[in-house]
Length: 191
Image (cartoon, rainbow, N blue to C red; front, top):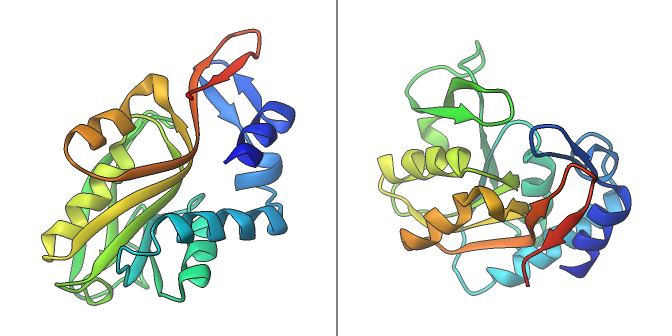
């Protein structure tokens, strides 16, 4: 998506540790018109996949997943990064390592929200090492549902998480794939 690349180049900021800050348009302050176009783009990419649910993990993926779910007219579910008092009964859970925060957490979702036979599209804001998506895949497969693919706004191609998932046979669609980020702020995209 050329518009995503343009936004990254004009509004993104490279921080130490290969962190790409896009909070001013994607995951802290959200450009709602752009978010709508993101949802429509991802929905069109997976229009023929028979998606019955969109799934993400809290919190930055929720807005994108909601936009995709609205464009596809399917429910959205999100895994919480810890079990809270409003998640009761049987849960699906998995441990995920956060690259950004450098820690492990247990993601949970109520088991009654994800059912056998469903066709699930995973959505997130970033794909780096692929740990979050791998965790969501484990949750989906625990119940006998099918992962039809994953869509990410931005993939850090140099961290190879998307490549690993593609090698395992998963369909991964990223609206922009960053191949390199230099300390001087230079960003290059995969073509």
